[in-house]
Length: 201
Image (cartoon, rainbow, N blue to C red; front, side, top):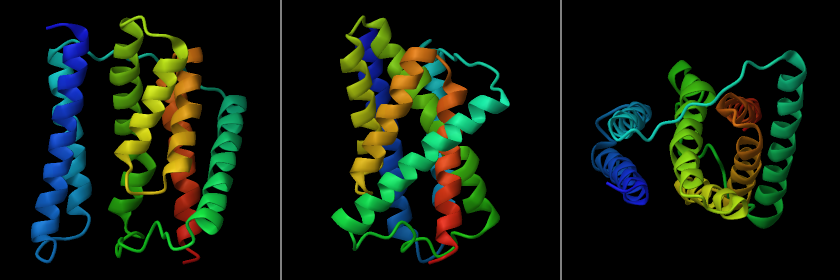
C-alpha cells in the first residue's frame, strides 16, 4: 500500500471510530457517565495506533526537555490561551468550553485533558500524520498548514481560531525540532490553564 493511501486510510479509520464513539455516546448518554466518552476516544486512538504500527506509519522523534525549555513552552501555551480569550470574548461570546461537561472537575476528566488528550492527539498528528506528509516530500508550508487544519477540524465545532493557532505553532515547532514531547507539553500546559480557568465558571 502506498504511503498516501495508508495516510488516507488511517485518517478515515480514526474519524470513523471517533464519530461512532460520539454517536454511541449521544444515543446512550442518559445511561452512562459523561466521562465514558473519554475512555472510548482513548480506545479509538489506541486501536488507530495499533493499526498504524502494523502499517509501519509511526515515527517517534523526541528529546529530553530541560527547565528552560519547559518555561519557554509554558509561555507559548499562555500566549495561545490569551488568544483563546480574545476569540471567545470578542468573536464567539456565547461559546463555553465547559457547558456540556458536568463532571469536568473529576480526576478522570483532569487526567484526560492534562495527559491523555495531549499525548494521543500530538502523537497522532505529529508522529503519524506529519511524518507521513514529510515522507511524501511535500513542501514545508503545505505540511504545516495541512497538519494545522486537520488539528482544528478534529476539534470542530469547538472554537477554530485557537485550535488552528495551536496546530500552526506545534506543527512548525515539530517540523523544525522533530520533538513530539515539546508539542505534547505545550498542549498539556494549555489544557492545564483552561482547567484552572474552569474553576471560575
